[in-house]
Image (cartoon, rainbow, N blue to C red; front, side, top):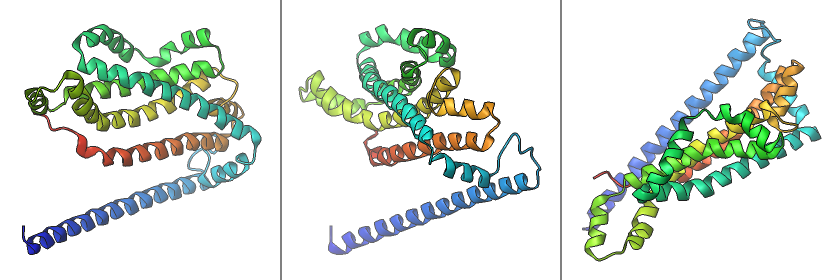
Length: 274
């Protein structure tokens, strides 16, 4: 390749990258503008009492409540409890879900053993199991950890199974042609191919895990964001309730955005279906 061709290729790459960045910036500004417009309409509806202030607060009142709440020790204690429950349950889901998903997708015998349980529990509404979980583990953090685990486990394990089913079979055949062992194929081809799918499963599991924490604490708890929401709701403190909702929402946005960045980094590792 001549120097001129190399420079032309680099120039095209830079132009393409610049266009992509311009498009992303445009999308970002449109998103920000839409959120600001929504908040303005919400505030106008509250100020003009188009909606009953008893049922829904205004953005300004919610912001004021947030400023007061972050100064309260109980708020941070509830955050600590919910954070512990979420992290513990989610880490367990990753540590158990990934190996089971990968092995069941790779080995048909192992899949035949675990698939009935995975399929059965997947279609079972996890909320319906809450009374049983509460009876078995109590109203403390243990029951919330279990429900977070159950909610986050299935997106992770099923993403790992899907990764095994989308392996490049031509690549595996080529490896076997060169006398590669099953373990070598598994380690060098199968495992790296699961990374993009696993990150996607983990990203989905984050949302499910956050839902599980709140639902579990709403059902039965003595501390946590869900407990705080229940307490505020009983006292008709809608502004404080929305602060709790925003905490969960912002946490989810931050975590999924971070996973999205990592996921894009490994997107090129996805094998093409043969």
